[in-house]
Structure formats: C-alpha cells, structure tokens
Image 1 (cartoon, rainbow, N blue to C red):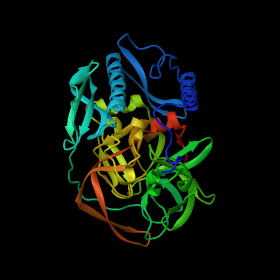
Image 2: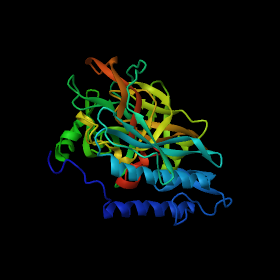
Image 3: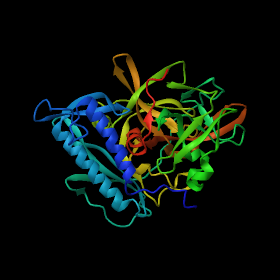
Image 4: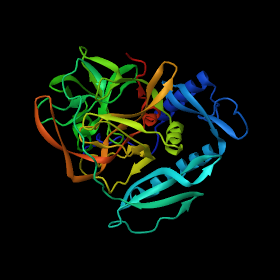
Length: 404
C-alpha cells in the first residue's frame, strides 16, 4: 500500500481544529451558544436543564431541545470513556467493535443514559475487560450473524436528475461495482454528490488511483471522484456540467424528501436514548426504504477484525449502527429521520450507509436493471456508516440543504 493511501489519523491537524472552531463560532454567533459548551444555548431554563442543538446546517442551529443536565453530563462522560476504551482496545485481537449504547438499567432525570458495548469474537479474544470505567458500565457481547428478510432493487435506471437514493456505479457495464448516491454536499464552496469510497477499492488503492476515477449513473458517465477518505468511506463526486443535482432523497416510490441539515452528536445521543425510540429510515437501491432504530453510536471497529474491502474503514470512531435491513448496492446511501419543521417534514441526516452487517451468506436477493445481468446479492440485519456531524466538523463537508 502506497504512502498516499491512508489519511493520517489519531491526532487532529491544526487546520482541522481551526475548521471545527470556526464552525463552532458561527453557531455561537447565530444562536447564542455559550463559548464554554457547544450544546448550551444561552441560559438554561433551570439549574437542572440545558438546551442542546439537535440538528444543524452550515454552522446554524436548525432545531434545539431542552434536556436534563444530569443526562447531558452522563452521555458526555460515556462518549469520553468510549473514546478512551477505543484507543486502548481497538487494536487488540478478537475485538470486533466498541461503541456506546443505551443503559436501560439507569435513567437520569427521566432519560435513559449510555453505556459502553465491547463486541468480541470469543474464538480469538484473550484477556479481560472491566465491568466499568470511570463510572460508566461496560458490557461485553459476542459477535453473531442473523438472517435478514427479503429485499428487492429500486431506483436502478437512467435519471435526468441526480437524487440521493438512486444508483451509482464504477463502469456503466456488467462488470461495474454498484452502489447508491448519498446526500448532496458542499465543500470549499463546491457542490458534490456523495457516495461510498469502497466502491472504487479505496482500502487497497492509493488516493491518486481513486481520485479522478469515472463515475456512472446506470450507463451514463456522469462525473468523477474529486476526493475521498478511506477511514470514513466517503467519496465526493464532481458531477458533469450537464448533470442536475437534486436536493431531495428519492424513495422507492414517488415520495421525495427535502433535507434540512444533519443531526449533531447531541442529537444522535438523544435519538439513541429516547423512549420510545424513533424509527429512522435507510434508503439505498438494494433494499429500498427500510426502517429501524439506532442501536450504537460513536462506534469504532477493531483493526484485526475487518477484512477485504473494509479493512481500512473504522469511521474515525464516530460510526452509527442501527437495525435497519440493508445490503449490497445500498453502499453510499443515506440514513435519516423525518423532522417536523415550519414548512413540513424534512430529512435530518444521521449518517451515510456504508456497510451491511450480520449477514447470512445463504440469504441473498436478486437485483437487475440498467441493462445488466441479474446479480445475487447479500443483505444484512443491520447497517453502519459515518455520522454526518463527523464529516461536517472534521472534514468541512456540509449537507447541501434547501436545494430544490
């Protein structure tokens, strides 16, 4: 693997810290966020309450909520402990993943807290894991596989306008690796469509081999890869000038949802711990629209666990996992929640859809379209991807909300 294949990780660069700080100050100036905490908006309603930003776009708060201060302190502590455990354990043989999950046995002023989940392969793992760290419980679970229900392919044809949730591929013919277009995004003032970098073998290729690669929508050459990152598995597609980028998510029927912004880290913690839990949506061309609940946040994967095309994907320790059905060709799609706004319901983006998890190799579905031969594809009981707040804060990639 060449030196330019991997992006340096593990410590923030000065430019990254400045970018995050610059976005933080924009939110502070427009909403009244206090300098001392990203989540606090002016004065709390009482000494036991604090207001958090749950959805943001381009440095502005779009939705806020008042929550118990005790809950906010606990989930923040769980996030810090989770990161420490990831740093100490993810390179250990037999560790599958480390994440934060609901702590059902404890509530904080009426809200469920968070604990750490360490998933292991007991055939390989040796050693002991403590029951808690700094007051945060740690539960150990065994990695297992389950059988997923059936699925079918959608949005696989040539479209005059490029939406999130339609087909994308690498060559426009039978040999193509196929996936889904994700959200329209902006970086450095430029508009792109997002998809998954692993479709172009990012883990085993250098940056120069992936960047500049042709991108196809069905049989049409529609653009090229402008940049990508292997750890978070994003690829930004510079669409050709004759291509129209839509600001909506195309579902597997006539429904199209506009985009309001992305869920913040606080917003994802809220979705993870609220009762009853909301059913969020996944949209990709393999399985179409599926729904499920967030089960894990701030997830990082063990370096000795992943193989093949995902060996380099660890989501920077900011992955999101949920129990929506997903499968091959969903890669690059979107996971979102419908949010009630003044103009009606819009999509709050949660994470990219990068991989299907817990699949049974005996359970497949057939997929065809775009003049390609039928394919037999795997599907899984769960999906995972990079949280949009991570892409926004650390990579300066913002969801392009408000497009028609």
